[in-house]
Image 1 (tube, rainbow, N blue to C red):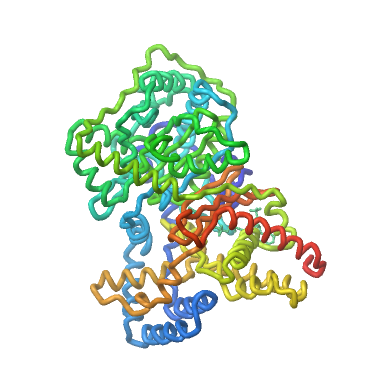
Image 2: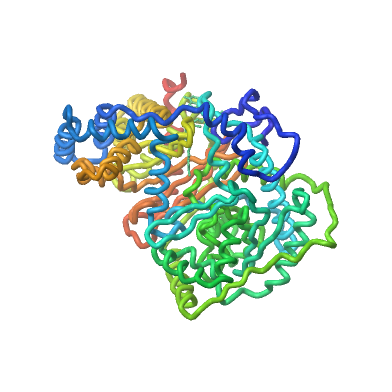
Length: 635
Ligand code: COA
């Protein structure tokens, strides 16, 4: 996949950017990471702090389609006060600029802390995305084991590129991207705390891990995946080892310790504290945390029709389907968990703190391609050591916590309605043929769908990559704009001409693309506003009124939380809504079709996953029909 002509998830891989392969294939060590990778990183620009006036002006414009006029007036006044020469805004701006001069990235540590580690809702559904891969070609235990063995070998093959720093640099809009996230996803794990969590990355330790953890029937095993000489086990050898694990855990355990990781973070923090007071438990947990990744060998899903297969697969990847199915067959704190079901269902779940979706998908694209190759290397299997089972001493208190976690997980699983919609009418080639950005076209269809259902526009979040900057993460593209509002309001209005509607669509798409360009170049408003607020906290000043204003709360109440995660494999990522009356929408636009995963909470009367999916499909079809029937639009 990473050949010179191959495409990355974000842009063309430039041949000149390939870091030359190292002559030795060795596991990672801290010293070697500090080589070519660091010199690439050093060449990247730092994240800029946008001008204060620019952000204030853009903030007001962004509020216009979602906030009432009298509230806007109030916010304008607050912003005038905030920007006054010599006022609080200027002081905070100076503080931020100082921080930017002194740090690698003024935002990223704050962001990881605030967006992830301080966030106390369960990581399951509320933060960790799932990834649904196409159904694989097996339907029994033997097939599951064989596929899983190849999958492990594929990840290790990708890991070699990380270890040797031979990963091709990715590009977006012709600019090289920060590759840091690739170094954060393996051998790392989130650790629950009483008030805030942390993340440890063992790849950077002087003795990097050589094992993965495998969970089967809710029981954890350590599987060494490298021989003493540093060479990886072959797929055949891994197959033999996985068979031993399955034989050693024929029945589901009544103590599914992994389900504890689905708890609210404060509860899990407390339980973790008591669980790890026991030495055996501490050692077992530490081995999971240190492992390169976790492989979940899931039991077969309950029978569903062909039609609902993808929805069930999304559920399995997102939360495991509840305590009586596979939710206990996970360690949700682990940064990367691959999931292989006995019935050919396959995918992953990842803990969001260390990375965004695109690097995870790039890794998975590589792995899927790897599993399709025939096995060539065999290797001796007779002398392989038996994988070590991890033991837990479960006290009555811990058992009670397990029961509580099962019950909360089941409530959450019952509440989340997630659907995968394969939109087969057309793919991203159609908007391209109309000289429109496919991403902007899809976002406008989503705006239209929501407007048709709710007769209003809502604050909409789309992730924009900040990886053009050193250690860049994301900013927000606010898809609800004045231009999108004008478009959706006109679309079903019979008094408007088609030519006018096309004109409004083109303007809305252009406005979205221009917001996207602004966001990826570090000039969007959301992270800057957050930075100003956190700077006030840092300087122990009172939080400025603009941040306690009702309009700010409204601006952050994202009823549509969306993200594009493209891939080579025909897959789709999925995540939960970020507010109780919201939707999570993730999509993968392929050339001739598009995959969507839509979620909402059944307990909310105002939302309906099926309805939004249908409305999306209709909006996309209607927009294309409008363009097809209005020749003027064809440039
Ligand atoms: N006419 C014709 N083609 C156009 C076009 C136009 N006006 N505008 C764009 N295109 C083409 C592009 O060249 C590109 O071509 P390709 O398929 O050959 O690569 C394609 O259409 C897609 O472009 P577009 O739809 O505009 O999106 P993008 O690839 O630029 O991505 C974002 C936009 C916002 C998704 C991207 O910038 C980003 O930030 N991604 C990160 C998302 C992320 O981190 N998610 C995290 C989730 S956990």
